Image (cartoon, rainbow, N blue to C red):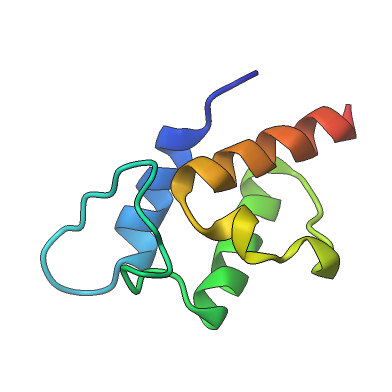
Amino acid sequence: MTDYTDTIRSFIENEMAGPGPKVTLSPSDSLIDKGIVDSLGVQRLIAYLETEFGVQIADTEIVPEHFETISAVAQFINFKLTAKG
């Protein structure tokens, strides 16, 4: 299983954290509680993941447990890539 944590963290910290001081996130930080990911942010993150990893994310897969933390996103992507073959 490949660890995509750093790739995903880099995108979130550099592209989604907004203006101001650079945000440093741990893999277990809540992206929702820290205000990094809201409903629009989830859509932006999904667009990135689909492009970066070549996966399709169904509406039924857009649930908080898949997008709560960087670790959760990385695990979800590993699942999607494994299922894709």
